[in-house]
Amino acid sequence: MAIHKTAIIADNAIIPKSCEIGPYTIIGEDVVLGENVKIASHANIEYSEIGDGTTISPYASIGTPPQDLSYKGQKTGVIIGKNCLIKENVTINRAAGDEGNFTKIGDKVMLMVGAHVAHNCVVEDEAIFANLATIGGHVHVGKCAFLGGMSVYHQNIRIGEYVITSGFSASRMDIVPFAKVGGCPAIIHGPNIIGLRRRGFSSEERQNLRKAFKLIVERKYLLSEVANNLEKEFPADKNILRIVEFLRTTKRGIYLRKDSCMSESFEE
Image 1 (cartoon, rainbow, N blue to C red):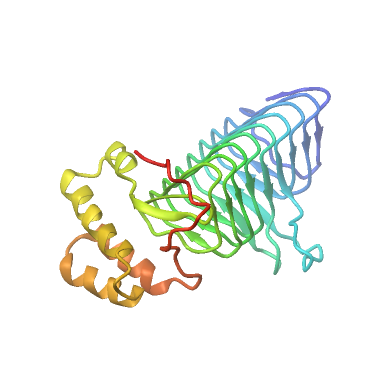
Image 2: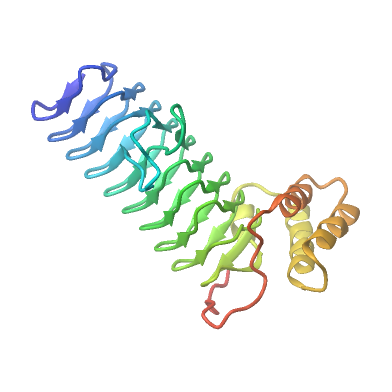
């Protein structure tokens, strides 16, 4: 175990011998580290479980109280998966609400400099937040989503799997899986073709998604009608059916209308 002599460690912290903890780092109450976790200098961690192989950079703050006026000190926490990369000045708040609630980060997630994950959020495996990307409380971010730098997202929305958003985007509505969006508000520009190709989606899958997104943004139909039409046209395509399910369960709605402050240069 390599713990710098200036680090401060709570008595009930669980730290395997394979971990490294840098100078002036504070490991507070109820922290459980997995094997081979590396924490650099000046980090602050409390009420958190951190998975094997995760690296935490200087000045990261994890497990601190939520920015929620209803929070009254309930014993909640943060769960972070394996092999994550958490860069400088990242903040991850512990959950609000009932005792036993958690803010959850999946495996192989990358949070770049200054990113913020608010209370009760769920960030699925291999998601990436670029510098200063910020999500409000109770946001769900799907697998392999990429959030652009300095982009911001309202509490209680869903950001679908394999989404890519441009820098400076903002949304207070749900973002459909596999979408490429940008602007303020974040408008759909089509499917995330480059990202899908890199993730191993076949040519047929990408082509079907192109057709599906054309139907979504045509604005000739209500979302319920779009969902029904997609289900009829692509009854065996699991990706399209995932979009159908997403459209049918949205509570926040989806941006389709162009806006004067939308980014016009967000292209492949």
